[in-house]
Length: 118
Ligand SMILES: [Zn+2]
Image (cartoon, rainbow, N blue to C red; front, side, top):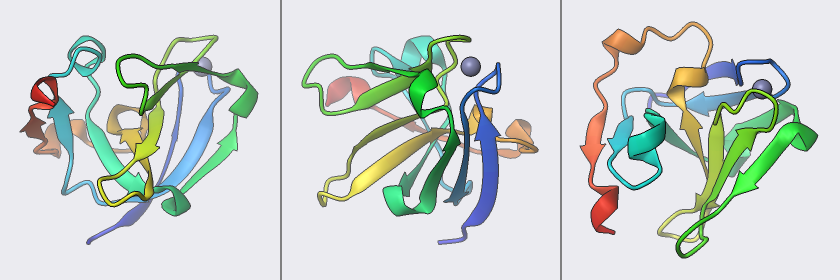
């Protein structure tokens, strides 16, 4: 894993976070929510993620099996990250790479993930 430290935020700035992530491994997903929100996602263990501010600014949206917390800023509506559990039971954070500072999105090569078939 080739992780680097990144910082990110929602649009209005209420929600700020830092994370150690490997942007060599990102996905886009065709599930019912990702196809609408258009996120590019990088997954990190929860202990590699720090919510710097905005815990009280986040709203939690859940659907289907309600296994994932699709968090979004209640002020600006941006969806900077979500929380869930990995296949091995570890707490994971799905970071929306589009919300990270100073990342050249055009250089990423996200893999298409077929979340719609899960
Ligand atoms: Zn916001």
